[in-house]
Image (cartoon, rainbow, N blue to C red; front, side, top):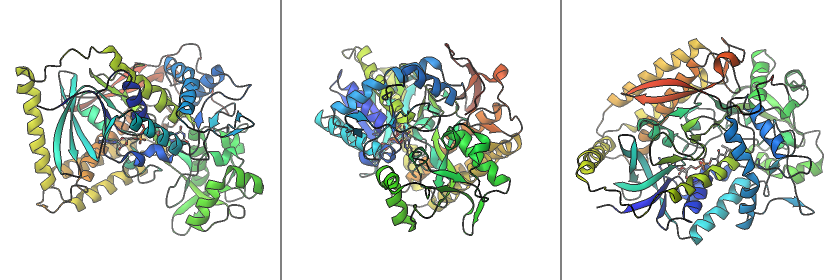
Length: 567
Ligand SMILES: Cc1cc2nc3c(=O)[nH]c(=O)nc-3n(C[C@H](O)[C@H](O)[C@H](O)COP(=O)(O)OP(=O)(O)OC[C@H]3O[C@@H](n4cnc5c(N)ncnc54)[C@H](O)[C@@H]3O)c2cc1C
């Protein structure tokens, strides 16, 4: 008989660690399971900032209004209020565990990021993600919360819409095991690796989203994929929005500061969807510059900025580009291009972080309560991970931990138990029959398909083609067999990750096809206008009898009504 866990959290990024710390207040039987070592979670790379109201003329209402306008009015307004109203408490919590925010004369030094009326993004020596992760990890260790690293979760154990635990594979010992738990919290982070041009790492394969979807959970807002305006051409390494906040300009090939045409008031600090689309528009109009190896780009220029700005505010970018590219940004502009960066959509949750499956919760980038709607503002993800990670962890307080979940009941053994054993046998078979070169080629095909057909500008024709090509990749992958007993347990995970990526991609394409309007990051060349009359709704996706089913859910509007979105 397996050990029974109260709270099993999948993922050791900021949302997973925060959930674990909160859950540990109510239970001493909390475990974190993660496919990566803690400090390799993607949260460590965040460098732009975390939003909170800190400057005197700012207000919670202004933060709420900016987030809703930034979302192109698709964010659920009850969710945005919860996010914003909890930010101050979370910042205080971070300080209480040792995060040192940058301050000048004891006052927070905040940066103004895109779409914000006021300076709101706090930082910690330009390494906000790393600082938060280090301190949360210290706390997790101090509280003796067990972390199972290098365990790759494959699927949930569930029956009749109730989750009982999960099946995972240990990469170090080549062992598959089922874990039974009163509640499971999915905090598995981003899915950006489905695109070839992404700022996300190769581990960001949408596992949690696909795992929940296969178990029958609803996904929400999947068509909204954020492309960050400024990634380095070739590598897609992110140049944080702090660069434009400190005054960097965008130039086309004529040396024109083109954002004056698209966002006359906010210029380079318009929200990301608008700046990315403007860059693509310039390039499509022949106004981009050309790199002989990587093609079209736009310039991000720092050359007009003083040495003190470069050294005090942008030293991380200055050092990184100097060592990586041998470029001195005080003299030479950077060659940049938009790249996939963040998923607004994910596993549908309510304000208690409950998914549509009983005992299954979610938080962080893999979830979607819709605080970001059709476009996320810079600095709003880290705070979302903390606020909703905490809420997810707190949910165990509503369970009676003395009630035994009858994992040994006949019903359970006959269905879930056997199902799990069969599942494990299937996985073992798959591990021996995977042609890894074929997996790698199929992955590259998927990434290039998503980049070419499901990018910043979409049409029915491109999306329909993407769906049919994706179905071919999936069918061929599932029927491709070879006898590769030499596969290493590390590399075979690319097969399971690719299956997850295909599920996530299918949900994105199907939702994008359905939404016949343009809103936030979703721009349909064949439906170029926002259409509030027909589309003030979220697209939901669910797997039903092995088929993807879509439905609509109205946006929750409290007191901010859709308006024109100019910046
Ligand atoms: C380069 C970059 C910079 C950014 N900068 C900012 C910023 O400045 N401010 C901001 O607000 N946002 C920023 N973001 C976004 C923000 O960093 C992320 O949305 C956030 O950190 C995600 O945290 P998370 O806890 O949801 O996931 P992650 O930190 O990605 O953690 C996911 C965890 O899930 C685990 N996992 C995944 N799949 C499995 C599986 N199958 N089995 C077991 N474990 C699994 C992983 O091991 C990992 O521990 C940035 C994003 C990028 C890419």
